[in-house]
Structures are given as structure tokens and as C-alpha cells.
Length: 98
Image: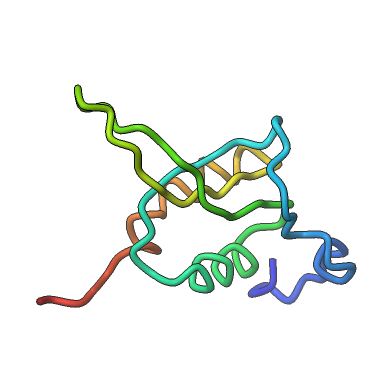
């Protein structure tokens, strides 16, 4: 973890964030309310394993089945997906009142 001052060899070699989502990664799909950089910065600071971040097309659960584009973060370590999911409402909050 970056905030604890520990060196992660995946970070050193630029292998932490990958450009494709392998099928064995655990996915978390959500609507993005902050910048993607905010999410990736949090991932680098608080987690250790490899991850993927990108967009995915989903179909709503409503009867009309409307297509939507959402963000997906996938994790090699499934426990990191659980931790991220629990803290996602705090990380992905839009604090602007209109």
C-alpha cells in the first residue's frame, strides 16, 4: 500500500493496472459520480493487487431493458473487490448540492 510506505513491485514495473479484464477478475459495476482518476488514486493508495478499470454496457432491470453505460472496476484479489464495494459510496460521492 502506497500510504504505508511499502514498495509494491507491481507498481514499480507498471503492471498494477491492466488494459483488459481477465475472466477470473471479480467485477464491481457502478455509476461514476467522480473522476476516474479519483478512483484509481484510491486504488493505488489503499490496495495491493492488480486491477482493471473501464466502461461496460449493461441492461437495466426494468421491464423496458434500457441499455446503460457504467464503470467497471475488476480485481484479481476478490477480497479487494469486497473492500472496494463497501467503501464505494464514500469514494464515489458527489458532494455538490444543486
